[in-house]
Image (cartoon, rainbow, N blue to C red; front, side, top):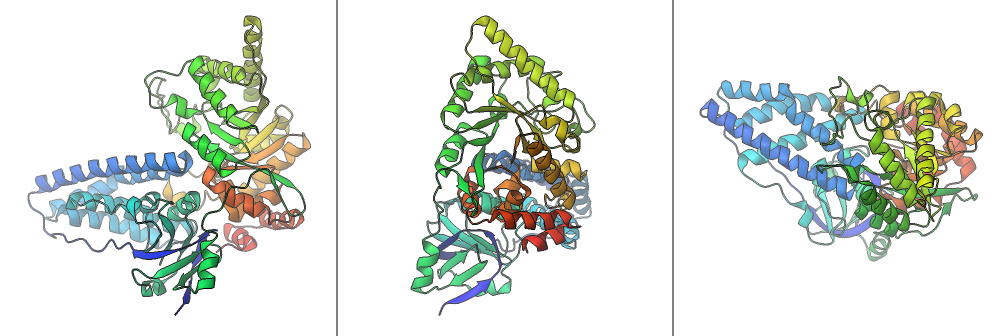
Length: 557
């Protein structure tokens, strides 16, 4: 008999398939260790194995989902490098414990502390479990269950899924998943949305009543798990498993047009963006041309890459100039010794200083690529002052003058800036007088507005883009841009969440740019929004005093 279990919907899609349980189970282990030196050597090998596994998963997520999302595994590497964890392991081994027991003991305290916290911070416990699981798998000589090879038509059920588990799911094989625990802001949920996998989390103990092999429908919109659905329900949930690309611009129900573009970082992403129905590219990260090589790409190599990107779309392609430094070291560039590199010489600061020649070469390639086309826009990152923008504009003028003098065909692009620092928000009226557009990088903006390190998982709650201070920063940037006749987009993770589309549209944002896989669902959501109603909702959200109040306004769990 059909029955319905309730949870929290995290991906606004549906699917029907065959239930398969993912049970990690308890590992058999010896409590007592042998020679401490031997146990420590086993731990060393396990850490090396875990590090390789994290790097591999990070690369997969960066390729399939995006660089921003992949950054969660940087935090996993930090957990691995945490000296207190390592000291705890060594202390247990010295006291006669086995390597396995030492790992369990060293992680149990931090996991329990995260679990005792409230809100999104509590979900960081899953990240610690993920790292601990890698170490224990390595110690036992076992392989992690390969979730990337599940049979087609699988609905995966689990008590919980770690970020690594979710990152390995193949959307072509897994038509949905449901978990007993978890919330919509966990990394597993974020990955599910990015991969477009229908998902319901937080179902509770009732999920355990679902048996292996039963037919299960996942309704990620309603937050329901339908076990043994009848024919009508099965048809309803099956027909919307995959959202089809919506070609062309979409508008709200009262005709406010919203551009829905894609964030891309590789040539593969360009294909995915085109297939997703994206209205052009809202953020083309150029780092892919510069990283993982011994020398920088020359002007001709960059020209070919930019021409390829511009040719892939008739609509606007926003190219961000090189944004290195901080967490993106480049082997052939000087590595700077900075106490806090995220507040150091990065983005446009480097381009106007140490990497000036590299910046000018990039501008030459971009201006040449734009010749004969009208869809190039260039955006500079990490802007904090008017002087930086004026110097960047002067560099464009100089490069254009040089090309003119050489008789080389070129075109001047639209120039814009990323709004990701509090200084840029406070200077937004002056910046908007000088550029054609803003693009709000909500990930960095949230971190800088809230003074919360992006690498510190204990501050995840503070970095929420739903913090009222962050929403007010976006609202002020929108007002400044529009007052000066500039357009404004959002290219941070926030833009790809369909549940936040109404908020951003209500704030007056003109463009939303996201991972290609999120484009169809966000376009579909925009079509359901009534702009005047969205404005009223965003006004209430901006006036709220806490994240929980904002979530109440938005009707989020």
